[in-house]
Length: 313
Length: 224
Image (cartoon, rainbow over all chains, first blue to last red; front, side):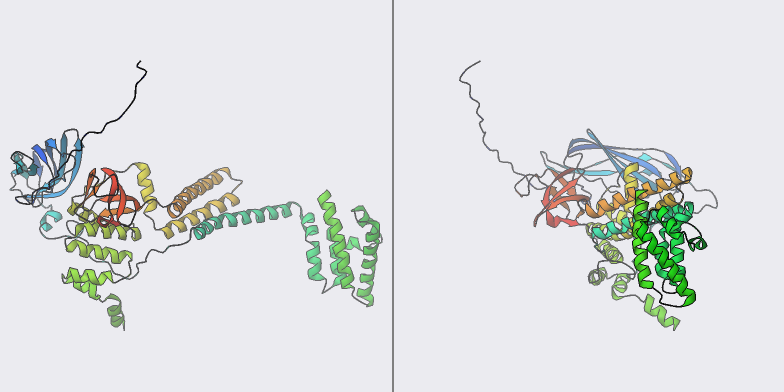
């Protein structure tokens, strides 16, 4: 291995390339951009058909040039045929354009030769047109009583067949409105939130159904606040009954303080609640101050105790 | 009274009258003054077609198609204009492409409403029928469908792909760099649709089945 090796790169002389435009002079109207030297041939998938039926005629273009880049010949005004459209297939060295076409008359006896124009860079350079051989064809008449709407109407523009559909009324069209993606996100999330709410509500309902006394106890304070203004005595009794999970009548008894204590209420608070209960009952039947505010404070204190007991349990 | 109402509702405007009388250039000018709704763009496409400007007609029909995605008359006229330009019909799409095409054929608001409806049915069904396995599974499928559609909707709005463009000139040349001195690597013909990946004031980077490269922006109409 040589020790003094050195890699270098050298640049050759620049080559000038002149790209000439295709000459306008002598350019046939059917020229579709093919440049090179080409030969063409045609074949049909059927040799006999009934009027109104269509056939496939394949034009094969072979040769050297821009085979893949020119546009397919359109066959406009192709004698005696209506061309519906074409399929363009490209493979190495061959371009096959298959036309779907239908004869317009029983008198048609052949698919005429298809012209193909290309520019030959020469020498001598110039436009050349090559043609396929005509393909013999037998067109049979249509059976009695059958009417071919498209063929009878062919020759004049028919919207949806060979002509545009007409104008549209301008009323009712909406311009494209841009909307914030966040609004879309909110709209898409809305059903999920509603479903979550529905699930929580159903769970709560089921829980209440399975434990009616518990549900009654949990609602006791709220019910007390609703009723206290109307009848504080009965409201307080109902509250205590709900919290002790017993009928209302069971609360009006001398052992109320004991019942409260066994449910976790401190002795002092139990005594106060029992005294308040006695006083409210006396006031109800004997007249006197309602004691709503004092009882409300008492309910708040009791509620704190009951909630903490529930949490602990 | 009914006759008067009929006349008010169905009388032809100046643009429509000009079109019906074959004054397509005048009709084109009058339609251009309207707000760019789907029907207006469609009508402009018809005028351009009648004036022999087939590539422009393709462009206008494609713009209209964004607003009227399932209009069959529009699809036919577009195909006819493309045929006039020598654009060949696309190959049959794969199942996935066809499915995405079906989803995208709905207007944004339609798809959104459909998704919300599916979500409401699926989620409420999941909650209410959660103790019936068969019904629950069916509802779960509906929810999955709604999620897939939501993903497409969000993708279309949050991450829209590059817009399409239609070649308006007789042909455009694609170059490796945005400079006229660079040789053309491919040519795209009038009326063909390309995907525009980037744009500057003068140049657009476009992609087509025949190649990808820079071309002068004036030759391509952005479909929007």
